[in-house]
Amino acid sequence: MTTSGQPRTQWLGRWGFMLAATGSAVGLGNIWKFPYMTGEYGGGAFVLVYLLCILAVGVPVMMAEIAFGRRGRGSPIDAVRRVVNESGRSSAWSLFGWMSMLCGFMILSFYVVVAGWSFSYLWKMLTGGLSGGTVEELAAVFGANNANPWNLGFWSTLVTLATMVIVGKGVQEGIEKNVRWMMPGLVIMLLVLIVFGAFSGGFSDAFAFLFSFNTGSLSSEGMLAALGHAFFTLSLAAGAIMTYGSYLPKDTSIARTTLGVALADTVVALMAGLAIFPVIFANGMDPGEGPGLIFMSLPIAFQAMPLGTLFGILFFIMLSMAALTSSISMVEATISWLCDSKGFSRRSAAWSTGIVLWLISTAAMLSFNVGADWTLAGKTFFDWLDYLTSRWLMPLGGLGTVVMAGFVLNINIMRDELGLNPRLYALWLLMARYVSPLGILVIFANVLGLYSV
Ligand code: PFF
Ligand code: NA
Image 1 (tube, rainbow, N blue to C red):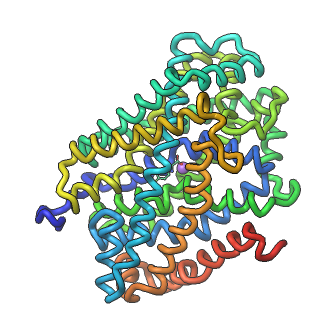
Image 2: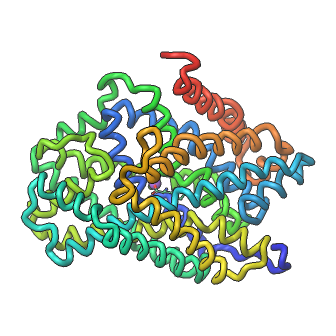
Image 3: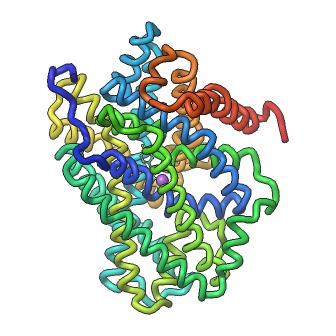
């Protein structure tokens, strides 16, 4: 029951939560961020640490988050408070709920800018704005797209509006249906790109870059980046998964759903890597190009392949949809908190959140033009939002989640919610109590220079 006394809505179909959580997980993190970070941190070693973090940290954290949401049936703040109170523990733990809500909001503030890139490239594809480009010309197109704040602001504002309109309409409508066709569509587009890459001459270099794990050692900074990206890509510690979990029916298996979401997310990321790096290597581009990487490389492939314009259009439609199913999940925590605890209607919650979001995202958007010089320690406002969330808030929030789940709660709560057989439950407990927390702490200690490897 919510505080307003109505039973809380639940996902409709048997696959409702799975589709929505996959929609949240699969997004720009997989197709934009994973490739450019892999490029920046030198390839295989980054990929290996990222995969280990997904398995050893991401999966146990996701299971705990969903369990918290379902047990507490509320926004992260309320859910965490209720579940720790049920174990006779202090409400102060709900600090982690607050942190995750803030984190989702901060991520969304820069995510809409990147989603805006995707929408604007869809428009360019439709109107011929990308034809005839060499690597240099495409870099110039990306630069010009960013340089005009009115242009870039138009696209990020459009994404903000679209997100808030969908969110205002409620959790079930739209999300489940959308993800059902978007996911297969995205996978097909990536396959087309991978097949093209296999014939274009850069494929073996790309494969070696992604999967040869001895390509030089990874910096401590790179390890923290890989850990942070594991959280980001699975939508963890940002309120999204916990809030979606609060709508989960009692009889759904949390473990099975988690594995499904993590697998789908990882497959899409690796496919994106295999689609993008052949183009990079075949055209002599720098893998460490940064956030513009996919926008400067993929259009080359679309121009060179048969039916390329059609595939390009379809690709950017899928990418934009994937971005929207993620962005709506990032505000769901805030919306559900405003509705359940503060008496807002969904509509007014969406509009008020949208206005604040628009202000912050506009400031983030300006980092690419008029605000490019507003830096602190060499980072723009956009960079700071990304850095603080991925490197610090999410790993710390995840640490809090597993520590609560493993040590703070009454032992029966997680056992009930997860419903695993004794062996698997023992495995989860081992991961939640020791493997994930130690993994996170070791990486933090390393980056803080407390020891060096
Ligand atoms: N997982 C999303 C992606 O990979 O694009 C990003 C994301 C969604 C992060 C929701 C955090 C979140 F709460
Ligand atoms: Na993802």
